[in-house]
Length: 80
Image 1 (cartoon, rainbow, N blue to C red):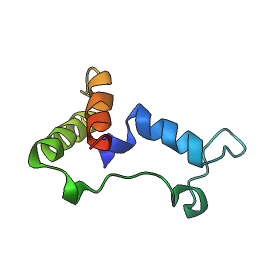
Image 2 (cartoon, rainbow, N blue to C red):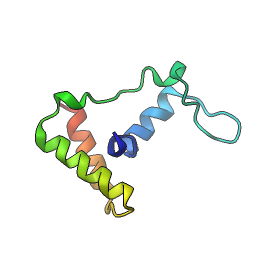
Image 3 (cartoon, one colour):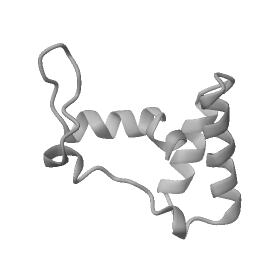
Image 4 (cartoon, helix red, strand yellow):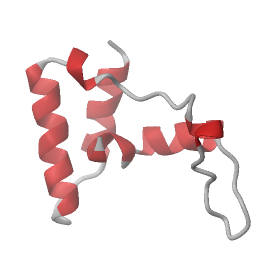
């Protein structure tokens, strides 16, 4: 989930379903995020899960480069 939620695709979806509150933050209440598209990881194949997991590890270590690869992986998952 860390990798998915850090993709620009998830960011764009967040902008679509939520609103900005004072200070410019996004309202993350269930009222808005209840409709946010989240992939069902249980339905992904092992290769896709491994890719997302590795990218999540790289994000947490500050080593994900280039970030564009993350969007490619997320896009391929959402197209299935």
